[in-house]
Image (cartoon, rainbow, N blue to C red; front, side, top):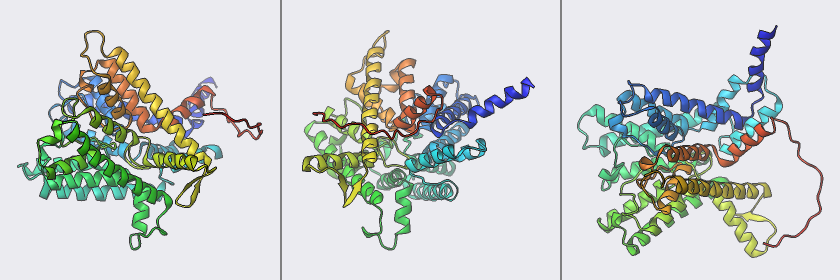
Length: 467
């Protein structure tokens, strides 16, 4: 009788897991499987050990793009296929896939778990599983195929062998739509800086992947009449904020690199300079592709600061990118405006935003900022010791934000870090992809042993706090 009880206990353990806990465990399992696959000799060369495979698998599942290996030289064709598959898993939404799988694994879940599952999907921007998940997969497949076809016939014309050109087109289309930033070439898209077709396709896929399913679905449903009254407030806010960030990033880079005498943009004409600035402004918001040199020598300090700001903000909810999200920024700006006007409520476009949403936006921003600063603090104390190469704090902070926001921009720090420093980046990539609040929620539930905490209905006296 004891043996069946021993089998029953682990079943009860995973039945009681909440969505945040299940998401973390599933993410770790997928990363472990990816590490085993990439480290296999049939997928990689002898240069790729278990550690390099672990770092690459984490970067792929979190659609970051940071790497310590040469994708084209160190991975075989089968290894590159495995990498592209991990980009699809991570880009289509680790939380959505996890919740989809949980319906098969966790049988007989209680009402609380089902509500928790739906809440997590809604926060991710999916809003359902069956038909919606198929819609996400179908949309992604169509856009990736269209992007690959255009790249094959009009973009990568300099690649001779048809098979090699086809794979390069498909791989970069997958990577761009999933905002991953992985490329088959060590210098990313720098060789195609003057290629308008490649730039246009990559930019379009990045934007479509980063807007989120909720926005693309809303636009498609109202494609015959895209007036303000038909589109939801979420869609209008995402589009408006994204456009504003693109313009600020583009003209900001042009100004900072002109006044700061950056070498990346000064070597090309104004037409190519504007295109390059536009490309990097969009790519900085979690995509990670580069069509110019990204380094502390090639870009001015003010330019790096601007890129860090764009990286930290990131894409939109439900998209394939990371960061604190565009809607979080919009909620914070609206709260600031309401404070300056002396209003008690936060109003956006004649719609009142609940206090819960504003508090969540504040929590995400403060938690993310503190986590990134903590990462930079750890790196600054450990990376410059033991004979390791010395890096400026700006370079380390840039790399930490790039990892946490799942961007993949690198100023030459990642590959030079020791294993502990790279492990800090691994933690940052994982936390950034899952979300700081979801991870803290999973830890909180573990510390409280899964106990239910009912909402406290006791009212407390109010008192003013001077800030």
